[in-house]
Length: 113
Image 1 (cartoon, rainbow, N blue to C red):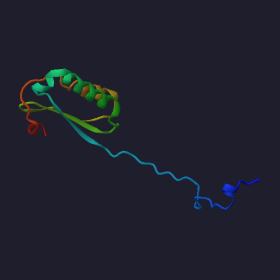
Image 2 (image 1 turned 120 degrees about the horizontal axis):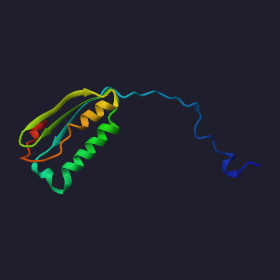
Image 3 (image 1 turned 45 degrees about the vertical axis):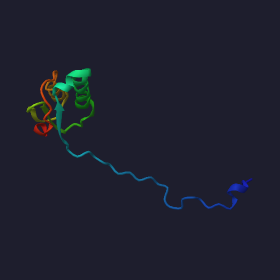
Image 4 (image 1 turned 180 degrees about the horizontal axis):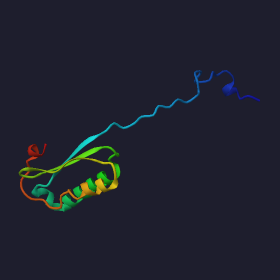
């Protein structure tokens, strides 16, 4: 027997119940990591945490076919590596070798950008 609660209610949706899907693909990305290597990054293990976060980003997050470059800055800026296309795991590992391990100098973010 039908419940009184449902007897006089219309269905909430009267349109099609067939799901529709669209395939979305990530566009080719161009990423430049601009990393602070100034003296303040030497305290509280900041430079190591920066390196760890950047390495996780390079190894696990950046999509295949992305282009990635690395710039560091302190008093001046330095292009550690030009853009490299991520098309295999070796490129990811190579990019990680350019991540900073030490910190010194002032903070000239404008030079980095």
